[in-house]
Length: 131
Image (tube, rainbow, N blue to C red):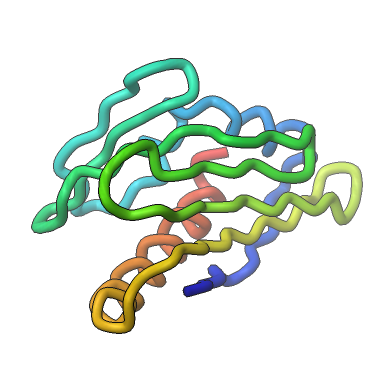
């Protein structure tokens, strides 16, 4: 299953955007209002939970300076990745888009498609004010 967030344009350089997203503790400021838990576990790993959902642990798996950051599931039953694509448009204008990729059975995919789509849309929308 693959989902894409809308693209947002930030009034920041690709380097500033990459630096912000590279620090996992900054993801707390991107989370939706219905977050019930957020905890940094290691320099590159954090746990979060939304009300009514199980806890999810994400770990930074890959970082391509000023271009891409990949967060992946760290343990648990589901294997998925959250990919931030960072594209510098001008000196202080950067486009960011989030992609969610995971392997799920048809029933699970149907259940999580809506909530995950809304979640990544919230993350990318909140970047406008957080970064």
